[in-house]
Length: 171
Image (cartoon, rainbow, N blue to C red):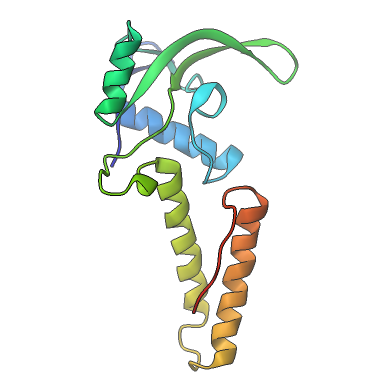
């Protein structure tokens, strides 16, 4: 439930890619390289150069980008600058996901960024998978402590990776 703009032009030059597809490609690549909690924005994590060569619409004044943000649209912009590769070579940045990656959710500011929302979903999935392992066990203090310890272990991994700063498991 997020919106991006504008359409992108695929690396073959003759394929128009909807912005949602370009963003999904960036999310997928980002998950593989940086993990699920990292935001796919900017010239490194938000770069679309692997599958997009240009955008159909250019943003002229900065006020157009600001209008996108005010309307909860994530702009995909062409950046002419280059970045340094791991070997020191110059790599053209090309189209990038600008910043923020907000959702259309207006009710909760904490959940309006895609990276936060995806991280919460991932934590819920971890908790659910762990709960399935003790689902038919007796509801004893030992079972609850086992579940809490397992969930704490997984959350500590997220804290070590810098995706969360702290947590508390209450059962």
